[in-house]
Length: 144
Image (cartoon, rainbow, N blue to C red):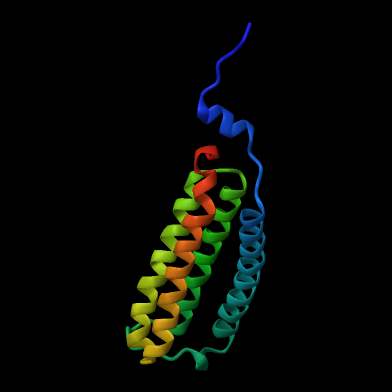
């Protein structure tokens, strides 16, 4: 008696992470862990030394910007763990965070008045969006 399996079931049975997927996940886990640690450290330092909290041009203090970036980094770490467990929502989340990074780079024009820094940040986010598409495309059917 033979059982028929669909293409999706075959993909789920063959879940093996390739080199580029492993490299992306390991680098992301390492860098996000460091980012969360350092942003939390800066956030605590800004709370302890309030004289460093000058108001930016958008009306938010550096404390709020650090808190927002720290929360986004924690969400990105959760998405990377979701990707590790083959969840599509993790890929969607990381992609949306890259889009938020592009929007944040446009806000940076008003905050830093450095167009070269904003252009570099925008280009880096576009690069990571392309990397996400290229890395996860072969594994998309294997994900839940």
